[in-house]
Every structure is written in structure tokens, then in C-alpha cells.
Image (cartoon, rainbow, N blue to C red; front, side):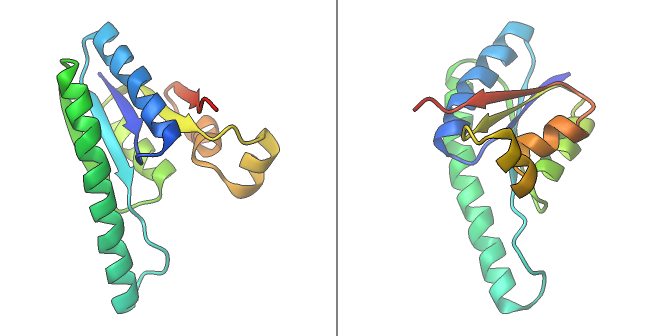
Length: 138
């Protein structure tokens, strides 16, 4: 079993990281840090440049998250997946036998999340494992 965290270096993700580390410690399980790096489009030089830029942002963000988790004594696995965030998290959760998926939220209204397709909203409707949505403190 594991704890899967969607991490993008945002304020919401930073707070979710702290909750995920606490959960991993409480269950003595590893933390899987996931970044979905799907670029819009799919062909051409512009797509490749955008895709590589997203992957670099993910590597930088996940490096900081990994350092924080390992400093707390939590074993980590890092995955940068070429998929949209919700799909990347669902894939990682299935492969790593997740006990829980943890994501940060921006405090959007449920209607806005439903209309715009927020990652937490998608996970709450598609995941077969519990999803913990950690609100951003303002």
C-alpha cells in the first residue's frame, strides 16, 4: 500500500504535502509523488517545447517535495507522467496500490469545479480509493 500525492508546487499542493507526509508516517507507507505533465496539442515543435518545459517544472517541484518527505523519514517514489493530472493520479494509485490519494484544492465552489473540471472534482467522481482534498489556507 502507499499514499499518492498530486504535487505541483502550488500553495494547495504544499499544504497537501504536509498532510500526505503525516498520513504516510501514520501508516508506515511510502509516498508516491505524482506530477501530470500533459501538454496541450500533441504534435509539432511547439508541443515538444511545451512538453519539456512542463516536465522540467515537475522535476523541480517534485525534488523539493521529495526532500521534505525524506527529511521527515518517509520513503518516496517520484513519477512525472505524460497525462492530465487526474488521469496521472488514478494511474499511479492503481499501480502503487494506493490507500489514499491526496490533492490540494483552491477553495473553488463545487459548481465551478464541475464546470471547469478541476482535478479534485474529477478524482472524487472517478477514484476507487479514498481521495483527501486539502484546502488551501488563505
